[in-house]
Image (cartoon, rainbow over all chains, first blue to last red; front, side):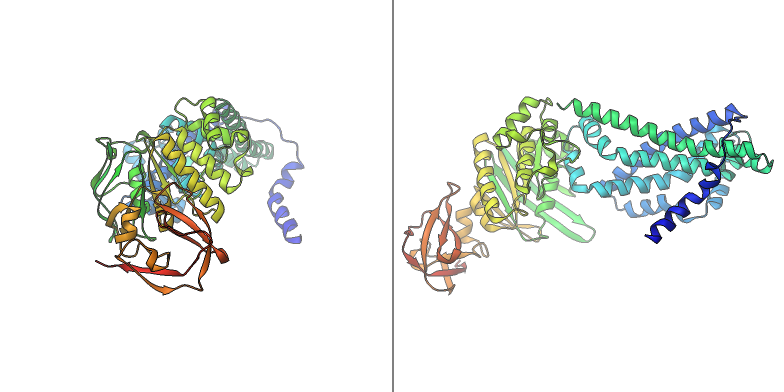
Length: 235
Length: 295
């Protein structure tokens, strides 16, 4: 019991100070908010699409390069993010993508995709290959709508949540690749800390908490609603 | 019209799993592939289903190569060791999903065929193992397959349920005029269910024939009990090693309307034997073990 209480306390410590203060709405930059939400939505979508299709391919491929490719994809997980980031910076600088949304998007994708693929692969391993083989015997559209989407909706939501949290944790990446031209809630938060504006910092911190919570909640409602509609079509 | 497996080869790294497999399955037959674990029988089935690729050879069904089509376009369904029902769908939804027009009426029909018409709205986890396997069968049949693949579907069932389901599936396949390919390591199961049997050993076909032919001729395909040598019709069979004391025949059960039947003896012993043998209920016999064929 003591262990459980200790864990709960450790998890809640960061939030004690936040709960004791009333957050103020000081959104100085609508652009930062729009950028954050836009990047989150697009990046989550791309992550879900790429990771699920790649994990599906990994599950079935008989290619002799499978293990090598799997290693290559998970390589960024073993390398410090700053090292990856600097390598990216050099390439994007030569391509003229520094300071652009596309550049920021590519760099965030490189950072998040290995985690997403790992989550998707684990999700498929939990469901198990034999059951997914039964799905493969169904026509494509039925397989996706009635089997794979409902079975993997939780995995997809987790991927979206992870992507959102990772994105919201990136300051150096967005500053470096975005060259200070792409403001997000995270970059503003860091600036508010540097400027010693506690109200702004508090407001942004609440944004950081609310964005993933809201996105996860919305995705949960949407996926449940979709699954219910789809199941209704089997009645 | 039949299924022709032609010179099929499959290698995993340095291991040759299938080494030039050739055999034919006649239309409306139940054809068994018998082999020990690792003989390549499941790989063979998965290649036919389109779940794996082969390195060489062809699988031709009704004059078209199945290898040209993805799994879902082959009109092949598979029944596995476990029922593999989709857990987020109810029993009825699992079957409805498999029907060509997503028709509830058809799903109800197939559930009725497998004697589970009252379980349409049940959750999958509420069913017993045998019931789940029957739903799986209903789902496989609902897809109106031209070829039914049975991948050791009775392995996880208790002996009584296993015999019932074997009988039930055989009758159903025959009534519906389906062609079925059964993969099993259990020779008795093959004898009871199949019209023809192919023996697979280390990725190679060693013999194909009717269960009766294999019983008579195939080395190793008689590793089951027989009764007193004098009564056996074949002169090619050697009977050695007496098993236990003489026992009284209690019951003859020709469950499958086949060339083999089940004989129940005192003490609970059950023996699978040619149905043509004239063993009399109430008489006492000496159970012996068949050794091997004479050339």
